[in-house]
Structure formats: structure tokens, C-alpha cells
Length: 226
Image (cartoon, rainbow, N blue to C red; front, side, top):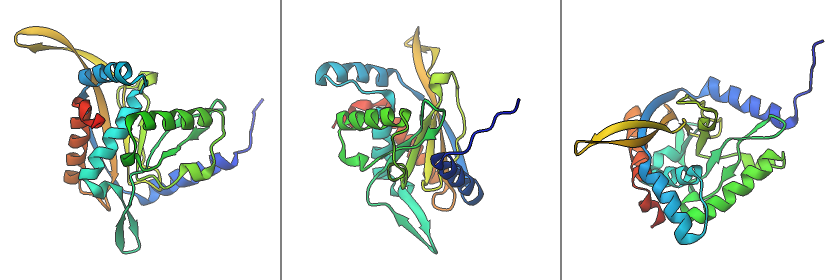
């Protein structure tokens, strides 16, 4: 027998926003593979030195914000005939609730936060997202979004920028590869990132430079602790 369930207010709101985004935001799609051996070491060392456990996503948030400081048009949005650049770097990320609803909470002013503060806020938003306890006000007006499907074994994917965001970074799963260094084979961890960005506000060349700067922070994550 066919089963039906009504859309919740949040589901309806998210659906409307994504439909609006797909219809109104032409996007550039740029992929880059990043070495993550240093990132993994940094996470372990940071936990030992600070006593705070940070996730790879927390590092991605920090890297996205630091890169945006160098490329501020990543924070822009079209308003009439003008482009406005946001005053703060607000970054959203996807959280699936236990009921199957996808929420997109926002970490505000990431550029002002330490890695430990980012970890605390993201953990709180993730927990409340899984419990369906986020308000609509906590899920709007992010300049950059981040979506990860690596935990499901997905190598790479292309995401649609949310309607109120200028860009979204899609994160694939970690992969291992043998490479030669000084004639010796070593295991190297890599991850694939896809940047989808509003073509109205950012050229593909500008977007590529931003993604390169983002990758630079991931391959040299000690810079994020400054």
C-alpha cells in the first residue's frame, strides 16, 4: 500500500530554496585533489597540545574562511544591479537529522574563531540538527557552504549552492595512493574537493585561485593555528 507523509515546514523551506538556487544561480564547477597527510598529523598534534579534539570538517571551515579573506568576492551576493560583499565569513554545512531531513546550520564569523571554538560550535549545531532542534534563523545567510559525503564512501560529487550562498565546497572520502619520494614508495592520503560557485559574482579563474588557497591551508594546516 502506498504511504504518504506531509512535508514539514523545514522540508518545504529547504526545497523551495534549493529549487530557487537551481533556477537562478548559474555555477562554475571546479575540482581539485588535495594531499591530506599533514592534515591528519595536525589533528592528532592539536589534540595532544590543546586537549581539544577537532574534526576534519572543523579544519575545512577554518581553511575556507582563511582563503576567503584573501579572495573576498567569494563572500559576495547579487543585490539588484550591484554586488555586495559580506562583512563576516559565515559558513554553513549539511547535517542529516534522525528523521531523514537535511539541515544546513551556519557557523557565524568563522574568521574570528579559533579552531577550538569552531569545533565547539559545529559540534553543538550538529547535535541539535540531528535532534531536529535547529531554528530557521540558524540556517540562513551563509556565504559559503560545505557538504561532505565521504563518510558514505563517495569519492567526489557536485553540489548545488544553497540559494543564500555564493559557493559550496563538496568533500569526498579519503583515498590512499602509493607515491615515490626519494625513490621510496610511501602511502599518501588524498581527498577530492569540488567548488561550485555563482558565475554571476566570481569568474572561473578567481574561483580556481580560491580553491588553490583553500588547498594550501589543508596541506599546511599549521597556518590555521596562527
